[in-house]
Length: 357
Image (tube, rainbow, N blue to C red; front, top):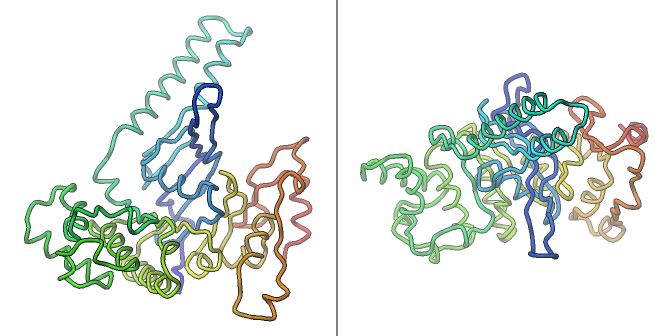
């Protein structure tokens, strides 16, 4: 059963116009990769927010930027009302335009440039400063349960690392908390002395979940936590996350590429394509009214346990160049009905409204 969320409360996480770019290659082959290009959304306390899309669309980069493994190129990230990350690309472009503006005097240019340079310094300070008391409330479950665990550390050392970083030094307290959290995720206290290679993939993922839970976070980023597991093990991990959400009231950003899994688990779903959020709505609404052609394409790829349906199932192919005409007006994320947002221009919005149920 999904937890009811209160959208009148202040969001626990707010992402505003987030952009994360990377430089790839060198010399004349150097290119700018726009992994995230202007993404905005809110996540409310107790909610599971699903972020879906095909490989390479920017889902994982979004999660890693939120938890400060990457610095944003532009935009802002707020956690519990405090800005924890901010980029300043647009401010640099504004400074460049001010310097080239012939309608401004030198004094006016200096004044406006100083204002923007001050904001850049504040954003750099937010990126560099780490509020450990705040950031320990945000943890991440990584996609690969093998590569994300140090093979030279025992399970106890892996799980307890967060406690030690947070300042806990008493072995008795550490042992008690490690044993408790291992039992919470379905492992045994005697597993604490073993190494990661002694466990199955599902058990390793449970170790990763225990590591995230050990310091009692309020918000967890689950980056495709079941994609590397067998189907039977996927169900076990999903049920575990469901139980943890219900019992502990944890807020979760659930990153995945399987829409059927996300529907089962999430309150709301955001669909990403090539670094952009193309559709955002409640999970039932996304399946009832899939408006964006890319969302329809993803849904057409979801298999069902029905041989007759599978025999006649037709994939919807999405080709942006053929589907959209943005030569006259660029798309923006617009609210087409309460709580349902879609990336479109005004002409497309009129067409999408005709297909609403």
